[in-house]
Amino acid sequence: MTSETLWYANRATGAVCLVLFTVVVLLGIAVRLRTRLPGLPRFGTMSLHRTLSLSATAFLALHVAVAVADGYVNITALDALVPFVSDYQPFWLGLGTVALDLMLAVLVTSLLRDRLGHRAWRTVHWLAYGAWPVALVHGIGIGTDAGTDWMTWLTVTCVATVLTAFALRAAQAVRAARQTPAALLHTEGAHR
Ligand code: HEM
Image (cartoon, rainbow, N blue to C red; front, side):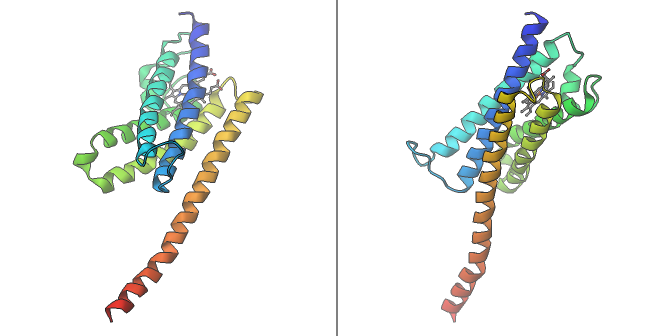
């Protein structure tokens, strides 16, 4: 495979990773909000969230593999795992590495979920949300296609959908917090 092919593959898999991780984040929020997606059974949203996160991880592995295989720039396997040590674009590449490490932590703890317990698993799972903006900034900072019309639209769409989903999630959390004291008072009143 020529260096040019690998470079195109790196850019294409980067864009696919961004889209897949965005959908994974949206589905994660949908699971929390107990959203039932049209045409899917009750646990369909959860299954889709899991399946797509595995697909996203596979694409991420490919994205990293082609970046390392491309001899035109010097990126080693270590650069892909240890943040900010690369000779090539250390800061922007380092952000991709931070996102990768966070994703790996989420993957490993999800596989060990039964042994870790729900609380520890959930704490680490929050990191996945943190990994998303870090990966986004990595793509904007290092990507050849950043600034092209299609990439700008893709990025804006991803950001807008995630922000909307977060706003809905935050609104639900506020509603739940408001309801809890009222529900407690109601229960206490019933016991008197
Ligand atoms: C969750 C993690 C990651 C995501 C979502 C992601 C996504 C992206 C995106 C969207 C681009 C921009 C493509 C373009 O505009 O051309 C990109 C570029 C790039 N990524 Fe990643 N990336 C991730 C992690 C990594 C890691 C760990 C590496 C380390 C090897 C890496 C190496 C690169 C390189 C070298 C480019 C530049 C390609 C070019 O020359 O245009 N990425 N990535």
